[in-house]
Amino acid sequence: MYDKSNVFFKILSKEIPCDTVYEDDVCLAFKDINPQSKIHVLIISKGLYTDFTDFASSASSEVVYHFFKAIPQIASLLGISETGYRIASNIGKDANQVVPHFHMHLLGGEKLRDL
Image: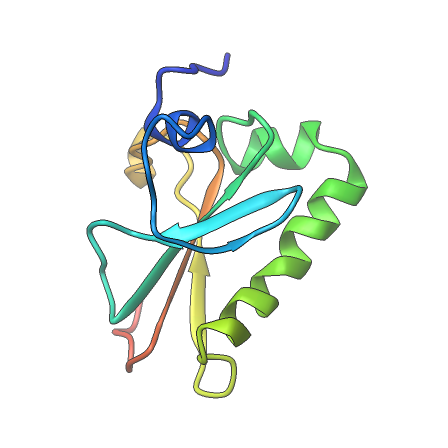
């Protein structure tokens, strides 16, 4: 069940400000306040999904398609398309998902460590 008390819902509701880098009808991308690389952007769904599994199984095909098509556009806006970037989504407590709202991490701007 989706919990509207999470920080990303509050950001979408404009209760909490963010440093926006991209926004459209499906997603919002903003700079992470605790960056793990030179460029670290969070891309959150504007739909109320708890994690990737919920998003993939509950969102319409059009919304899923649009969300993932936005990621390379955001990377291009950030100037990291040519040098490369990483996208990741943590799902559940064992993966250290901190905020129970579907989001992707976009990291780049420097050589990233191996996984």
